[in-house]
Image 1 (tube, helix red, strand yellow):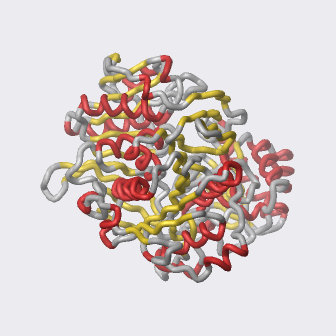
Image 2 (cartoon, rainbow over the protein chains, first blue to last red):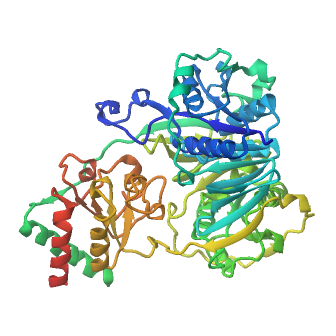
Length: 272
Length: 331
């Protein structure tokens, strides 16, 4: 029976920034953004659950984050995850992708002897797409990134479709392997009502949601958090809306005609 | 200030990926003031047909390992080869294209070398660090493009970064360097080949933003896949290409390969017509440098009007058919 881990992350919802999250100076108030399940991690979880439906194996979900990240674990339980783990410790704060992959690979090794690890291709807060491959490297797993479809799975191999950017690749891989999954792979299922009732009041630290700290994992504190992060944020600049010189045309046929004339002027210049 | 640049081939055309040329030129401009060297690193079944072109843009040497087994992206094998080249060269900086291949191989190497990797940089420059040697300052958007972060990698070598295609402008050709292509001989272990590529099909429809002077792009405001046909009609009348915002792609109005923005393509056309696009920061990151921007939107407060040169506050379903009609009459 294959053992499956899914790596998930709670992220600020950068995709839907509303007026409430904008400060007066036109910059984004990051603290005001709602926290959501990273979208492509949902696709990774769905892929794990589809494999479970087919082969009957166990799906275990792991997240690293602050205590409030328990919400994505509860959502995973609602959807059908068998076990979930919150990897949380103050010493993990400020981890860059390298330190994060160190902690997550330590958690994976601590929890079970996994054959398959699924992760979203990238998280919408950083868009780096680095943690999945880095975890694969640290565990010595094969890597298939940009997985767009699960084609077939059996005891010895897994066949997937990969987005090779200029080509579509059908790849067969042995275990152990880590896949990074894109949003086109599937449609994540809805939470199951019975499971919601069962886990609605669950909290981190309950038997259903164990919390693992740096001591539990037995990993090197010097390789975690800020200390374990080779990259440092030197400077942050918020992007503000800049006013241009806008020429508006009337919303009638004369206006549209004026706009078209301007385009033709441009277009003629362009074709020279 | 030696820099290694990961050189990539487009497997469909057999030629260099544009980003490999862009990064060779960028690396040259970064390290030239320090008399630094730019070394290309290639792994595959055969060098790109036009690999000599790199030497016109500042590359000093090109190392390669060619084996039939390396025709496709075998992540572990590619990592082992490029990592061996990096260890041999001992560079200060390593640059990768933020392609589907670069974003696969670069993190494997940064993990193995336990050094920093900064993804999707939009600006790179070298500067002093606390009077304590030189560092690569790496600027990248984060939080969906809402902030620009400058990232440094003090105390670690090499300093690694990825850059998306089209972000670094290609300069005029430098004085050509002599072509210096070296077979990097190394031991190969069969266990590096783990995946099997059962089938590889070039993508059928290729969107070509790069050669398009005009892009007509649609957003959530287009309202449906059928309405996107209006944009195709306008693009046809202008000889342009059709693009889309992330929202339009997420709603299924347009295919992913048409996406423009921080997580899509970066474009700089002469004319960009934004139809029903609100103009989120994440979208503007991909098109704000267009020469001329026209906004068509029913919402006069849409942020897109903040960067547009010309605009019209009206439903695109009304405006575009009129534009197509007038273009045919006037053009």
